[in-house]
Length: 287
Image (cartoon, helix red, strand yellow):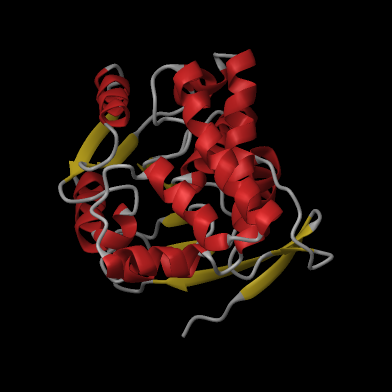
């Protein structure tokens, strides 16, 4: 079992795991960022044994999720920038300069933001593998802002009423409206997201706030995309048609982007097909 380490980053105490794969195809490093509400190890654990490219894998818990907390141990609001600063602090602590990034949902937006910061700082873009990254799910900024209001409803329901089950249901209906509602799968997702419900609600608000800011500065998202070099983008075939269409549009417009749609998956794709995602990542990197 890999030991969990802790690092004081700003106002947060960040939990992380640094895993070595001695049988890797390279001596490279990869940062893996999870989505809202579910810790890094739970998100990527089933995928790790199938990721054969990197020697070192760094898996943090973003503040408010897993074992990462505000230093007061109270759940507090977070922003995309505050989460990004913490990950930058962690990267500096482990002395990484060259590394790839896997990001899922919220973690995908943090990955894009971190990459843009690092490009501005040292001029080098990082390869990214993004699974339905938050903020790319619609081409139209105003439509995206409208969609995010469903997430605001979810976060407010959790904090204001204490009805975590209903709040998570609002989130799931917003992020995966076309999912196959199998009782076991629904219960599993509910359980994952209910672990730290207030932290989960603040994570949802962080993305919603970022998208609302984007409506006032429409090029905010373009800046992140324009700072990328090579991106492997994943979507679930059961996700919204407008999401899939936007991914195709973004990937077709950029030489370094590739979009892969996974059949039978919705927004929970890293939990649904971790082995297949790892296979595509390995092939993309070793090509």
